[in-house]
Length: 55
Image 1 (cartoon, helix red, strand yellow):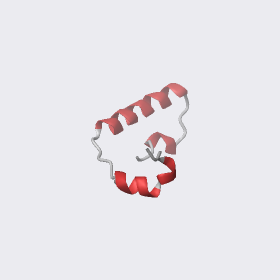
Image 2 (cartoon, rainbow, N blue to C red; image 1 turned 90 degrees about the vertical axis):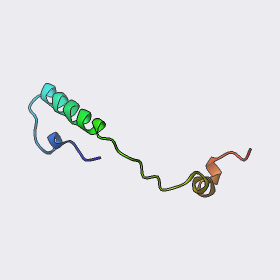
Image 3 (cartoon, helix red, strand yellow; image 1 turned 30 degrees about the vertical axis):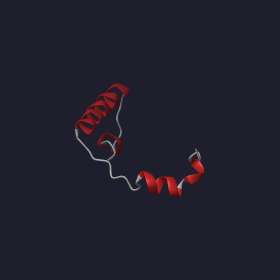
């Protein structure tokens, strides 16, 4: 996720910062994104077997 553009400059007051962050968050949340999983469930269970119970 890209950083909000308002973080690259000085903003004089909290209200402006909150307004700009809310607008950025709304725009980011409206875009539909796909998750690119790196592991299948089977791969995860193999690589992370110590985290999964044996039952």
